[in-house]
Image (tube, rainbow, N blue to C red; front, side, top):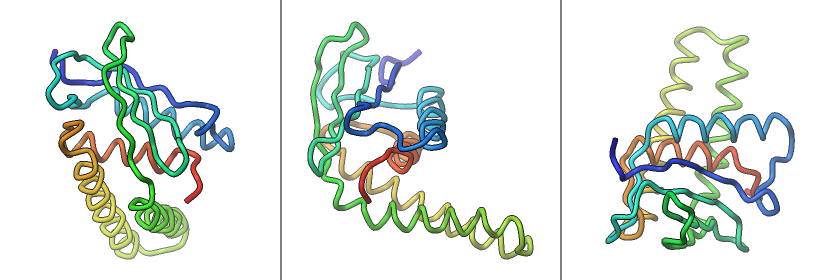
Amino acid sequence: MSRDRLVSVEIDERSLGAASAEAEHECEVAIYDLLEENSFAVTGQDLGPYRLRLALEGARLMFAVKDEEGRDVVAHFLALGPFRKTVTDYVTICQRHYAAIRTASPSQIEAIDMGRRGLHNESATIVRERLAGKIEIDFATARRLFTLLVALNWDV
C-alpha cells in the first residue's frame, strides 16, 4: 500500500463542529469516503502515511498534517474566500437535485445532476490548485476533500 495517503482525518470540533446530527453524519460519510481511497503527499516529504486535522483559523482552513505516529509534519492554511461562491452554488444545486428527484422528469434530473457533477469537478480543480506546491493530491482525492469542505460547518 502506498505511503502517499491519509490514514485518518480529524475535524476540530471547536471551530468546525457539526451544526446538526445530519451535518455530523455528512462529515462522517465524507471522511469515510476520503479514507477509503486517496492519494495525499506533502511536497518534498516522504513521511506518509499521514494524519490530517482540519480546523478553522479565522477565514482560513488549516490543514495540520502529521505522520502516522502523530509527529507534526506541516501545517498549511487555505483562504476560504475563493471557495465561498463555489460552495454556495454547490449546496444550491444539490438542493435543486434533491427536490427534483420527487417531482421532475428523468431528463430534468439528469440535467441538474450533470450540472452538479460539473461544479464538483470545477471545485476539485480549485482545491488542487490551492494546495499545489504544498500538498499533492489526485483529482479523485480533491473531489472527496471538496465534499468534506461542503459538509463542514463554516460560514459560507
